[in-house]
Length: 609
Ligand SMILES: *[C@@H]1O[C@H](CO)[C@@H](O)[C@H](O)[C@H]1NC(C)=O
Image 1 (cartoon, rainbow, N blue to C red):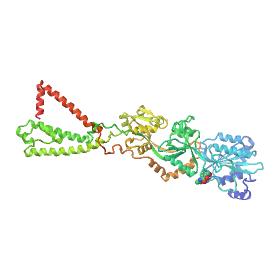
Image 2 (image 1 turned 135 degrees about the vertical axis):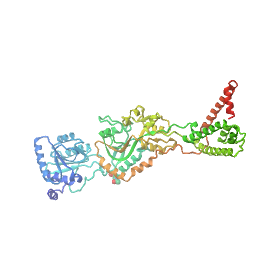
Image 3 (image 1 turned 135 degrees about the horizontal axis):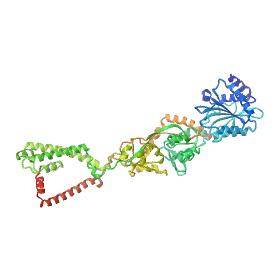
Image 4 (image 1 turned 90 degrees about the horizontal axis):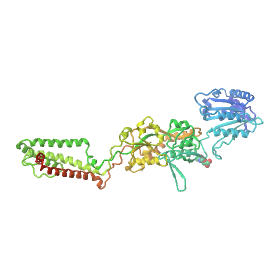
């Protein structure tokens, strides 16, 4: 019913910008139906409120509301005045009788009760100073970061006029300039934030690779890179705004979020609405959610430890590397058994010994080692059984020796470390310290063992990245808390000798999004763009260009062909020295035998095997 009425009225009166001499209620009902946001009209309750200064206008508002309700009945779900439970009201019709009652609405406005992204229809029945009232009311709405606001006004002659504003246009940026709605023009307010007409938006960030990479060229022009930087660039291109980068002046990186307004760093810029939006691996925490709002997640990461390599093997320890310990046990076992047999045989008759060793063979234990190290046999046994035994032993020694010699060369050259401790328990056992920003301490509030060994990294420029680099160079006696992408970026762009390990235990997942001040008008438009970009997989692609995702393949021990250095061979020299020492000791013992008979007996026995 109301639709036909409205259509007829439109054809009769609405040829000028003003609604003409129709009653206010008809103009309001018509305006809402014609210019309202379709999604709100269909299934969002219209909240009607009245703010008045005196009894007379109060009654007038009741009459007005009566008329509007009659015209809108059946077209919209409508709610009058009662406290709104649950959802904030997105569709609001506010009736005021002057600036001071409008001010009461503004003071009572909260995010809990009203939806910032909603639509606000203000009806002002004050016939004096129309232009002033329009710019005051619309200016206040825009100060509250409300994008969709309309005001109905009646001029002295009783004609109804509708004003609104477009904060970003070809002629101005971020100002609520009242603009009279021309009745004939269709849909002029359909989507106010599709196009920013090249206006600047303030973007709070700081250098945080691989997310944000800020570089200045020699003319002082700033270029924004990193995969979140590229995302912001693309949003700016699609929505046609320019990016005005703001870096926190206190050098506090993300900073603390405090509800009482004493936030620092990026959080302060957002809390004070100094910037319009912000990105730099900003994750969602409860503390932060109290002072800022976040958009859709565009990337998922993890908080982990950047772990240094394990202790390096000493040159002496490297001599044992070619075989696993099991193999060493088997080799030593064989030797012990062989020596055991010889000792046992020595106690047998000459006939048995000749059968096993061969005739006139002296010092069988020396021979055993002689063959093991590849020395020549001066005298060979005659009997077939003895020869067969000797041949088998030589074959065994040949294989073992060849295997050892071949792989020893490789191990001598390459820097080799014990495996890195990749769990918190292993790090604690290895006596590592835990380096982190003080912001990260909250992740360990239920882990006092870690906190007891925590050292805080300064927020100063570059200290964070420098600590990760120090982990890579093995200069730090601890692990660093950071995001897995920080490690991946380091491993991609630093030499393989500075490889940083990533702990297998993750501290927590870290979904990232763009952050906005609590009162923002950008979120919906940005979310729409980000979802389009994200569904194309671009963010992941950009990230993979900057991050080496392989955290577990050791790079340090890739074999390099080069001449052996003294360092490589130090182990052999050490053994030589130790053996010289043993020889001198034995010499002294031999001198002592001149006095001590029983020692001499033992030595005689050993020399004759
Ligand atoms: C972006 O805005 C500028 C300034 O209004 C305008 O000249 C330009 O054509 C716009 N670009 C696009 C792609 O709409």
